Every structure is written in C-alpha cells, then in structure tokens.
Length: 102
Image 1 (tube, rainbow, N blue to C red):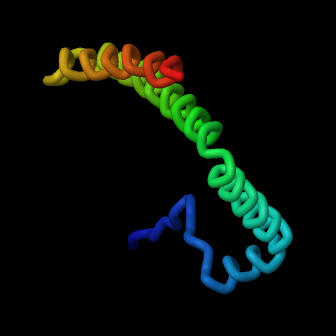
Image 2: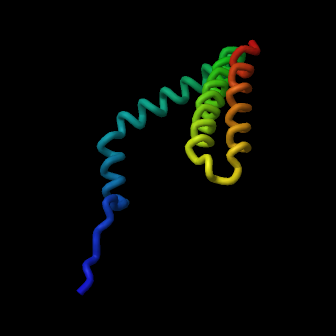
C-alpha cells in the first residue's frame, strides 16, 4: 500500500484568488494610483528620474557583485571559479561608476 503525500505548498484555486483580490481591492487601487503618480513624476522630472535609475542600477551591481564573489568562493571546486570571481569583481568595480557619474 502506497501513501500519497500532499505537497507542502498547494496552489490556490481561481476562486480563492478572486476572493483575496476582492478582499484587498483598496490596496490594489492605492498601489495603482501610487504607480501612476510615480510614472507621471518620472515623466515630469526626467533628470531626477535618470539619477534615481542610475543609483538603483549602481546598488544592484554592487549587491550582485558581492553575491557573485561570495558564490565563487563558496563553490570553489566547480569549473569556472575564476570566471565567477572575475564577473563579480567587474560588477563591484562598475557599481560606483554608475552612481557617481552625475
């Protein structure tokens, strides 16, 4: 006799999802309004939105580079250790450049 195990995470049904969306419709409306206002501000102030985008990309590069270097040392025995290390270091070097070139 075999037992069927139930998965730890079961996907909600469509009806449950609709119920959750209907229950939190106010938050979805507020998020939509906030995103529309942020988009309008980005269009109205292109210089500031460009600076904000460059800062965000710089932080993404910095975090990705640190994670890549840690990953390279964590899996040292895998092939491609030096490529992972080099890419991580390049990300770290590129990160300040995208933040400070105002």
